[in-house]
Image (cartoon, rainbow, N blue to C red; front, side, top):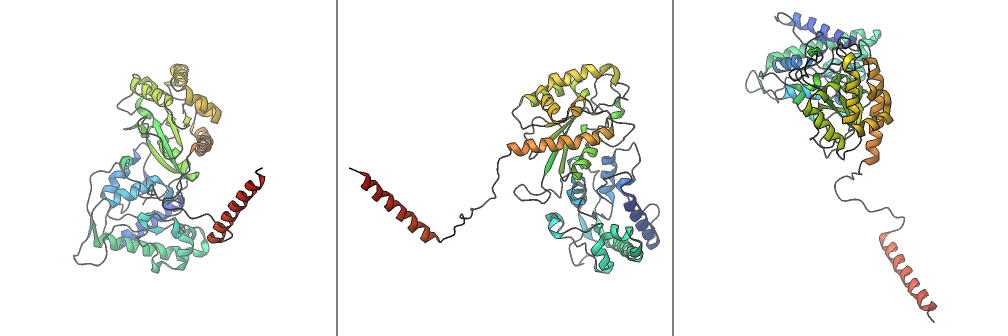
Length: 412
C-alpha cells in the first residue's frame, strides 16, 4: 500500500489503521495465511528501503495507491506506480471484458480531476458502493470524524472485498527485483505539457557508495549508491535524499533525486547538491566536483551535512572543510550568501530540516532570474485592438498621408 509517507511525527497513524483494518477483513474473506499485505511505512530500521519495496512491488498481486493531492506530487509514488505497471497482467478466465489491471485505487483525500496525472485518468477510483461521504471526504476524513464511523467501516469493507476480487480474478506476472531509483516517474508531466505541480527540484547527492569508501571511513553511513547515504545515523536511518525529497514535496516541488553527475547538463529547474565532504577524498569525485564548479551553469544550492557525533569527524573536519572551499570556491561563495549554515556543516537532522527550505527558496529565485521565457507552442494570437483591423489600416494610411503633406509644407 503506497502512500506519500511525509509529514510530522508519526504521520502515518491513520494510514496504518487503514492498513490493519484491511488486513483483518482480507484474512476473514480468504484462506490466506500470514500477512496479506505490505505497506512501505512498515519497514524496520536498518533495512534498505528501496530494495525491500522493490522486491514487494515485483511480487504483489494487487497494488493499492492512496489518492491524495500530495500523493501525485511524490516522485517515489510515481516510480512505484510505474514499477507495478511494468508487470504484465491478464484475466484468470479468458474472455472477461475490460483491460486487466491489478491496481485498486482508494481515495484517501479528495483530489480535483484536473490534478490527476494523465497516466491515472483511465483508472476508475470512485466506487459507487462506497457511499457519497467517501467521495466527499475520502477515507482520511471518514476515519477522523467519529460521526462518520459507520461510513468508514462500510468503505473499508467494500475496499477489502474489491482487493480480494481483483486478486482472485487478475493474474499479475512476477518480475525480477525492481530498482526504484531507476524507475520512471509515472506522474511526471511530459516535457511539452504544463503541470499544476510542474516545479521540479533536482536533488543531486555527491557521496561515496559503500563499495567505494575512502580508506578508514566507517561504512555504516552508506549503502549501494550515493542516494542511500545516511549521514545522521543512528539518529536517523532514512537516506538523506529521501528526507530532502519529502521536504521538497512539502514546498510543492517535484523532487528529481539522483546521484551527482557533472556531465548530465543543466537541470530543468533549480538544483540542490547534498555534499558529503568524504567524497573529496576520492580523486575522481573531487575532480568532477571541481569541473562542475568551474562550468558555466546556473547557481546551485549547496548543502554540506556534517554529523558531529560521527567518530570519524574529529580528526578530518578542518581538512575536509578547507577542501570543500578549495574545490568548489564558486558554489561555496554563493552558498554563504544563500544560507551560511548550509555550507559550514549541518550538524543534525533537525538543522537540515530547517536549512534546506531556505536554500531551496534561494536557488529557485536565482533560477527564475536566469530562466528564459518559454512561450507555448503554436501560432500566437493577434494583439487585441479596440477597433477593427480595416479601421486600423485606414488610420495608419491616413497618418502617413498627413505626415507626407506636412513634410511638403515645410519645404522652402
